[in-house]
Length: 264
Image: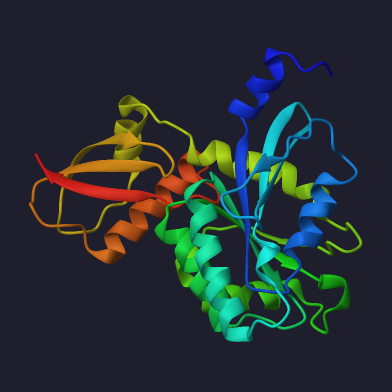
């Protein structure tokens, strides 16, 4: 493809994806699997540090910009320093991204640093995909059991889809593209006030606060203002119920939902 204004358009409209995770989980291998064989438009963009490399590619007519955060492994550095750097770089790249792909190591299971890094993605309000790498060499072969472990340890991300892959063998990695597209679209989705009012009428609302109506204030993450008869916030269980119903009704897969209350 010629280097025309369309190339700039692709870069401008790119879905920015941060590949994050602790050291040695396979972030670089995943980036190579995603960009190596299907590279159509390649744009090496200078990163903010000498370790960061952005790869912009076109896949199925859509542009994706992947940020590799794997440059933290340097010889002579302690594990503790590598962990500190993994957190610093994860936060930096999360701020620049639309979607976070959190890479987990199936051979080691979940550790505390996984939860810490996942927590930063949640705090930044990013759409999230949990990518379980090295599944081909894992002693655990029960996906349902591993997902239960994820839900037990990452309760705050129970809305994030999980994908089991082998980045080394490029097994399952192709499924990431449509999934990234889907969670990006969900995080960018805007619902009309009319649709939300019809949604309110369908709720089996058993809480002591009356909802008059809901409006959507912003996207990425989808943020809703709930107008009620009381000045205080929704109870945690009521907020969770409402977020889950919104997620089901409007297909908010893989994105956090923010709910704010206002007294009418």
